[in-house]
Image 1: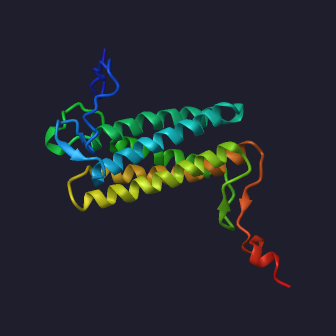
Image 2: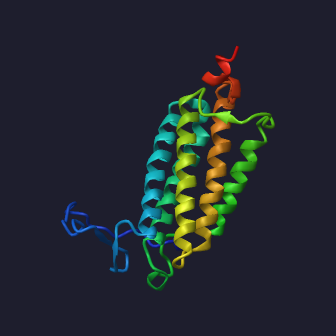
Image 3: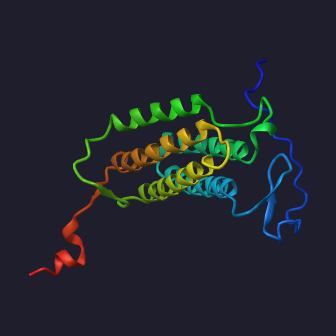
Length: 207
């Protein structure tokens, strides 16, 4: 039997609230106390938020038989995002050799996913708006949160060491979420919502 790539989690969460964070601080995986609004905490907290939105998109995809393969991919991404949160919650000196993290293999798989989905799509002739299907909207929401997580991680990297794979992963994932949003409408036979500048009130009301 081959060894697993990462250590299996060993948790015993018997008590949910501890009151230790009431003063505005929290602890990293290595036990260091940091403020809850530090850039590292903001970054991996937003990755956690992103995971929740990817979960919502996964449920939307699971409700549509034509999106079954996409739902499986999104579930995989949720595990990758939790791995990403694990490594971001750990300072470099505390990282264990088999600790969960995102890797170049995860990034390469996202690139293959993007290429495969994009091959089914017509080239973009206009910017698109979220809409058409619930899955499309959920994926666009996840995309915007992913971009925010990426910005926060870039800011954190200016102050302290973060794994370069983490930034690359979020960058590819935001691209993937965009392509998947388009692909969801394509797979369901629903037209994309194209940006029409003159659909604004100022354009409609112009004599």
